[in-house]
Image 1 (cartoon, rainbow, N blue to C red):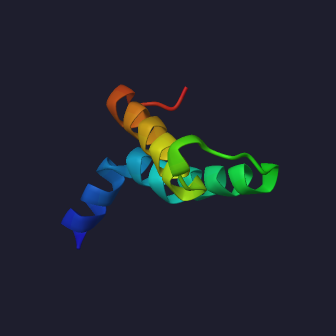
Image 2 (image 1 turned 135 degrees about the vertical axis):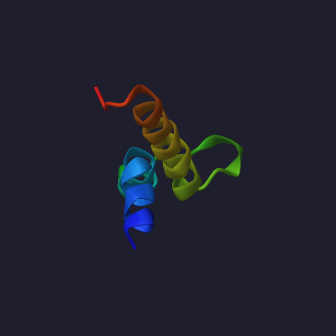
Image 3 (image 1 turned 90 degrees about the vertical axis):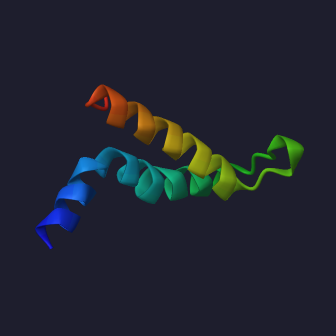
Length: 64
């Protein structure tokens, strides 16, 4: 149990990026009515943006 929680906290920024920022970005894209190139869905764009931001925060150790 503690090992699983430790693993979750270790990858917290990445999980936050994929679990919160990605759907939020997808909703903003849909609400704004933006059309994405190459047939990319808003969720795919959100996962890309959220994954990149989460990975950057994970590697740097901070969000800002």
